[in-house]
Image 1 (cartoon, rainbow, N blue to C red):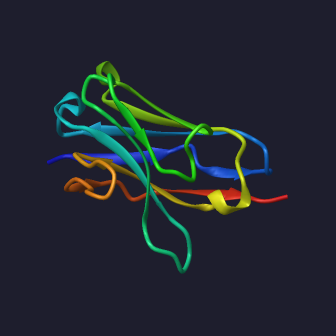
Image 2: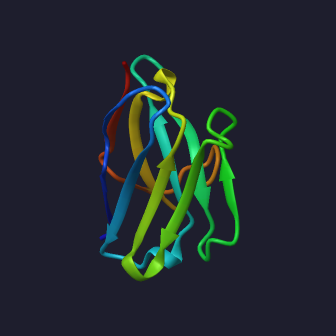
Length: 119
């Protein structure tokens, strides 16, 4: 059974950077597009970024484009999200997703990692 485990969340000041990671077990990550979504308190889940199976293609939500970078390492069954120039509105729980893209999440989710952006 596919499991996804996120790590790397935490607190960061506005303008700072943070990298979150997701590792897959129970499956081969190169079989899936991989994506990140986020959800802030009281808000709907939002697509953040996605990467194709071979990392040739990436996609980003409008609010994070040019600030966040998604990458993957299929040898490690891992996907990463490098977040730069963080803003308070980036505060959310970040979820790893396997098989999804944009508004169509895939069937597998991690439990999430919390990111706080505050001074």
